[in-house]
Length: 135
Image: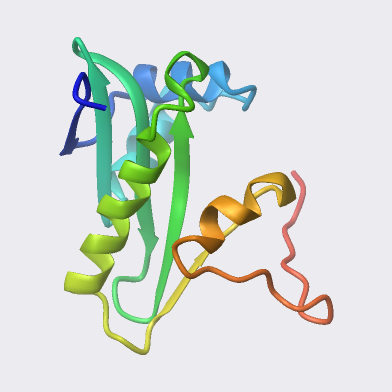
């Protein structure tokens, strides 16, 4: 992990899309990325020789609801503790800045649920499904 620099910053829209594509996620229009990234409450990026290796951000209303979003590590840099380091930084920010009774949530694929459980997250009961609107 010593070859990574993790700091609070926004990636460029181009970097963001490259990272999304590296993990098989669809890219967004550059303007859409600019607006969305700027609306982040907090964002950390991990760099390796100035290359974006991973990122994570917090979105929400800043008082009642906070969501961990875009926790992404490039496949080239996975399995080195980078995802853990990114989430730890996000959780540290929440501990320091979010009200203790605020909701802190995330959406994750089932296969990575154990990763997030290490940070205190729990899978919602099946009678309380998370929902989304496909577009």
